[in-house]
Length: 383
Image (cartoon, rainbow, N blue to C red; front, side, top):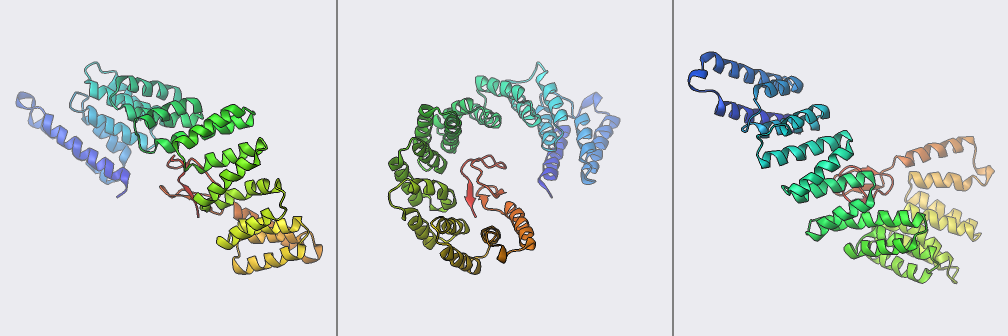
């Protein structure tokens, strides 16, 4: 039984209990009245068992009268509709509840929160933001409202507002707030770097690493900032710390390594770095970088021999695609068939899973600092 059906069954049980609890007694509780309630309830269950959830929901909604005893049940029904994608109907249910003047404070807060989630699901972000802020003022579930508001600001890429929310959660000891806050500062630094606001870049990255010292993204951005400022020494220091603390992200370190070592006096330093890292943990990306470096210093035969070894020892789509491009400079070794194969292999490479979210299992061929599926930060790990 899937989660949707199980949830609906639980709601049906709750409805049955409520119906039995407030079914009219005395003079109003006639045999016909009792029969009417029973028939409606059985009809709703039949729709449920027949997997006709739409009619089941309609039947249960008509069966329950909106009063103080059934508000929670209508909230649950609205949530089920929202989870099924029927956001308009969920909004209507929760709006009708809010329109009632006799709701308790707890019931009103509950309805506000669910309506805000309805608006969020419907893409009505301004309305959702307004209700989440109202919840913060009412303080029924202040931290929950801040989390929802934070998710909304991240969706809108409103990083200043997102930082304020994440900071509030961080100050109150919310688990996971440090990672989120750090990435929000990284977003701010990345934007500032593009427009040349170096002061904001430094301040944002300093704060990002202050709240999460293990943030690989912040360290990489700081390396880039130091290189842009021609401070190679500072960039190299942070770069070496990254390699020691987070070697699993080596594929992301190759490009900055090339820039760092290309500015040094030792012409062999970049080659030595690649060879050392390849010996520790061989990968296709490191192999390709090393072959390209051999080619750049005119060691063509050495590059070809190394490529041959790579294809034999650790063949991959990426390695073969690179090999076809690499050998294309020598027409004697290739034909149009190889060119077509190169295109095919490249298209396969774009579909390759290189990173997987450690929490929800979302797969991607490129690094996603904020998992698009579960929305957690720094959970994408290399395969």
